Length: 218
Ligand code: E4P
Picture 1 (cartoon, rainbow, N blue to C red):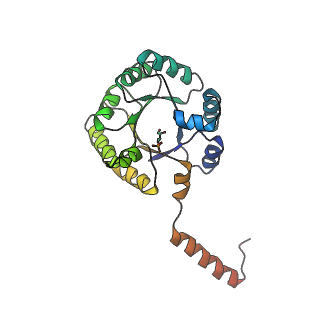
Picture 2: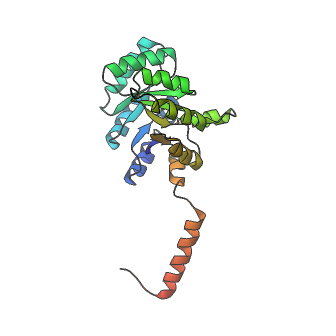
Picture 3: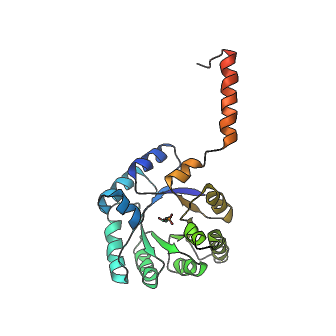
């Protein structure tokens, strides 16, 4: 499973990329607003820092506006993926943008049927929002499992499952086990994947024993 980082914070992205754990980046209008800088500037900077796909989301809600905004965003850099929402106009825009050779990420997906429509519309990625489903008492990861099974049943689909709205390390494990192709993970959650109390405790005791031995490797 690949890791995308779910942020528009260029400092975080550069740091995580230096650790070799970033295969791509996802942003959304809220994350861009939080960055507090113009979208074109932020996306351009991220695309220069990261070789993989960088998702930038349209904010128009009807077909024509989505296509126009999508084309505008795609002009920023060759690795931009255009995010459109899982609405009827979004699926139409996905078809049009995909046919013009652009990579489209269909976002705000909350059901397997929306994922089916996205695949039929030629989406490069489908983004089921696991955490937001959990927030309303549903099982977000079950939607990822359903999408995996449906996509496996149709060889004509060429859409990668991008598990989104990932909130915890457990979500990451579950997404990988459910067959997601990618998880987009907030920086804090990505960093926390290395944490284990037994690792900390084991390292402390190894270092204490090593100190007592009086040896040095260098
Ligand atoms: C996905 O691309 C979205 O940016 C993101 O995963 C949403 O996560 P949230 O529900 O934690 O805001």
